[in-house]
Length: 118
Image (cartoon, rainbow, N blue to C red; front, side, top):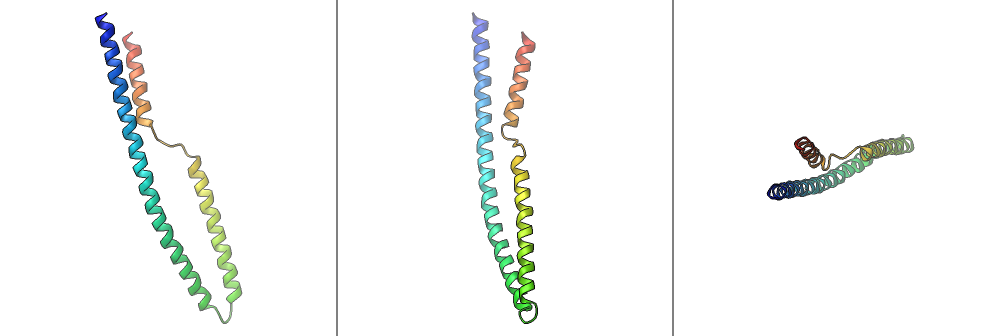
């Protein structure tokens, strides 16, 4: 009876430790995603502003002679860049997240230890 109490106590301690680890991983991932969104939105704002100003500069530079071809070429360039970024986003979205990888590996180790004890 005493050994079964110790086993149950050990299992509960392992379970509690794994839940705490899982909670820490969730919090770390939440903070990482929040930081990435913040920096990404600021970067997008400044890149968008730079692209807009560059476009205006180039159009004004060629205003007298090649105004329409320059506007068409820049439109095609930006459309192509948008397609490339969209494709990169789709590829990144298909990638597997490493969320809970540590917890899952620790649970696998715990299971292996419990099986080897019996």
